[in-house]
Length: 335
Image (cartoon, rainbow, N blue to C red; front, side, top):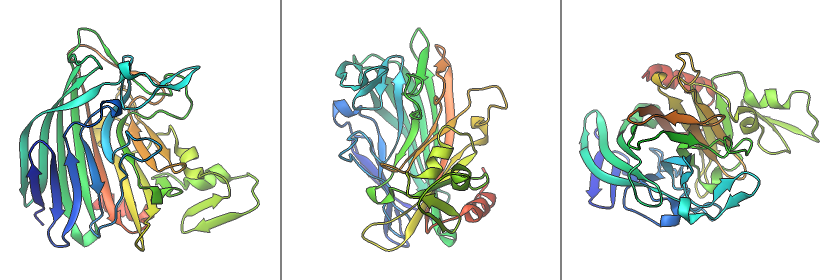
């Protein structure tokens, strides 16, 4: 089914599913607060049934905005937003390190039988405004009404325009354990705290709980958990897998939603081709977040003139999908 597209120039592009009347997402590209590292983002994102699956400027991290491409540590600069992690000092307010990603123009904004296409050019800047990188971004969306879901495909090609290497890192490469966030980053709504994260492998929560002590243990579907903090994300943090799913329950309305984050085969998530591998950043507490990080355990170095190219898909579904449902969906919709 053709998706409807509305473009408010210098502000946002909104995509709607005509059959349901649901606004699936808004792609906002107007600049926002400098301290939040201005960059385009998608929010709100909704399921076909209208369930909200993103948060915007939450009070714990004002720079978290739906789904956006970020660079938390980039050659000493912060294109993530907010305070900067400094080893031995924690998070420090260093506004002179906060940069931006700026909209430079659209090459295509279209809607047709095969879905929606947004092709954009962006520039990446440190705090002083000089040019560090150019990005070609392509966002595509198509609905699977019969399957109760829709899919967003995000492709970015970032070219280093500096005369020296760009070093992509994360708080973990700077010394903070289990905080390897950078790259494409999703912040879930507050209702999704304590949700269920899982991958294609054997049940992750039960691996984390095996042999552990707790006053009680619960099992719901394929999700095992105890009175402790969310176990699945501890087990999956910094791990590799071709996809990761996150299921949460809505506030204000009945039901659940599931998001499936997927690497393109060419991203080389397991490092078979000798390129820089990707690892998952995932949290369910104190907030819901997922990022297929390209610099979790070690820095990614992009030489002058070289291109960092990555593609991802995000499948947004009504309902609490389990591993079998995710696997069947991905088999029906190969890359």
